[in-house]
Image 1: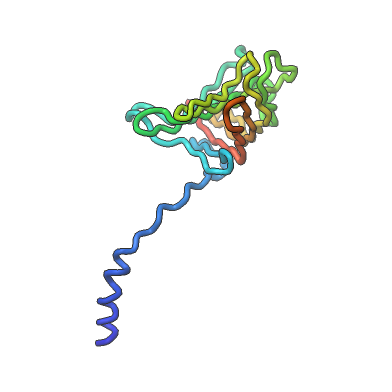
Image 2 (image 1 turned 90 degrees about the horizontal axis):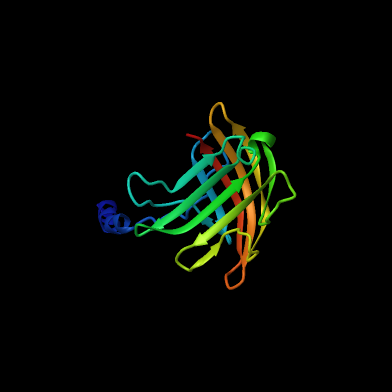
Length: 185
């Protein structure tokens, strides 16, 4: 009888306990076309999230034909809050059709001396800081992107990335542990 009484006393406490929302985790670094993307932005997990409608996407990839910049690829990931874009992280790499898998240097320069180069951009629409590579030299970018899989037959592009962006009047952005596994459509 005491056991039943103890259970009845503890039951409301047990039912009332709620699990905390788990901390977001980076997706695994896969190479299967799972349409995943994630990184750490200044040490915090950053994932695409939300969208404005059923037809919009928070993650997209574009693959250009070899006749344009040697077959470049670009990825754009967005975080939507309250129906509007809060932050955008974009990554673009040139000459992937020509050079395939391997490391690509990311930098903001007018005429890159490297045949395998690319850019990374970060826009914080709420705070008003846009780290967008352009020709005026106001944004500094240093980093790399490593394509680990480029399978055009099965339409899969996968890789890892890390870069740092700096701009006067804005905080420095350190993007680390980046990974993507995208299906080309």
